[in-house]
Image 1 (spheres, helix red, strand yellow):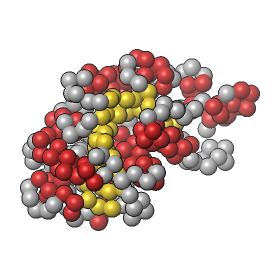
Image 2: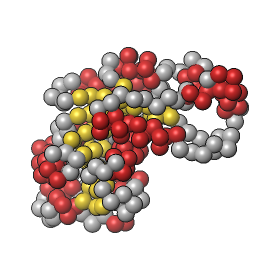
Image 3: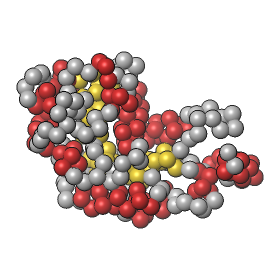
Image 4: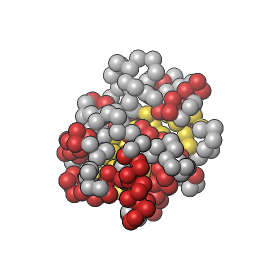
Length: 257
């Protein structure tokens, strides 16, 4: 039976959809059968992020309104055979879809999959409640910015009204150099402020920095996926390369880029 995990945030622009997609890819590479369900009916862009928007035939509303079966609305990712996408409403984003209808669709698929990751709209409106009502667990995505923390705190307060098995924190876009210099809050400090367990740290990467290949974020997503799969609490060290003598040089150079 699939674990149904809603990926949510209080504020838009914190990388919630990117976290959902990358986490789904990593879990699928670990042999898990994963569904990425897009419940953001306003932006509905998880298929765009995955690069398969032109291959979408049916969406979740087609299932709810009886135009296809739930399995027919799943699109297998061309590069990740264990990863399946369910697009959100592409025809009428203003149409009312009840939380119960979304839950019924995902519950019907759960016995044949290991994970259903539910990409949730930002904020705490009706779309948020529609997504959370279909889940058993929650990942709250935030960044170290004050506005993001304030909105994440509001979301966590609302999540407490649901009977979820767990509510965990993922801190995204972490600048290791700024954390090392004490200029922004560390992920650990953010978890203490929000009062929920820290499950993942995702670093902010430049496309090219001092000849280093981009890939730290992918390593961080592998650690996050392993934590979810195995129940561990290992965290990516975003400040590691910025400590010590050579680390201080890296911090200085990065600030001047």
